[in-house]
Image 1 (cartoon, rainbow, N blue to C red):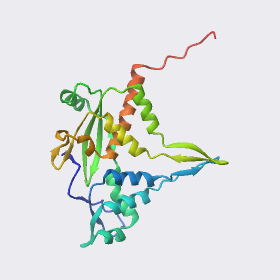
Image 2 (image 1 turned 135 degrees about the vertical axis):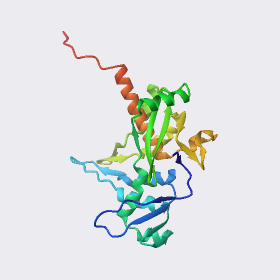
Image 3 (image 1 turned 135 degrees about the horizontal axis):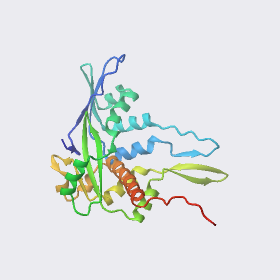
Image 4 (image 1 turned 180 degrees about the vertical axis):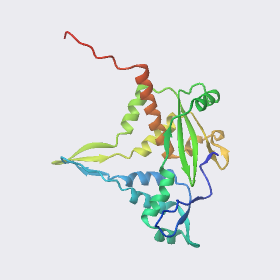
Length: 251
């Protein structure tokens, strides 16, 4: 079943946990790019003063709560319905995190040989790399494919630049680590590079039939796909151009 990028609403029912009374069903809209950019901004601290030992704690609960409060339409629990603001008040932060995780656990995975052969036959001849994603939508897992062309050394350097999470900045007499917001930059790079996708629909229509199909792609999916692409590119380089064996030298 395709991954629908513009569903009217999505129902999420996280599994019941032993010892926990009551279970929520969440009815939400699918997160937009702006929702994911806010999530990315809140997930880790933006700046840390550098010291001999740096402990970086994520803010996942706060990030999930922020995105949940933006996308929730209503929730249900034990026969009761809570709409909008009431749902935001009633649902505990940890429950909000459980719901959001059912959207955010997008991962690239290895293609089977059969999948690769079938895709090669129907994708453009300029395709060099194919990335397979496993992406949850509500309570269902979907498989999608992203196709990319040959990657240049300049594009590899650009990926390295955009994917750098922390950079050192001087602030008077102190040095700090400042976090870059990589999701937006990597999603834009993925949209620039991708030449075809499979497994997505927009209002039931195959995404590739739309003239502006790249603009409909999910930012989180795009980031995961481009990360998978450049892992594959590096593996390809190492396979075709292995490091020379160490040898003794007279110099």
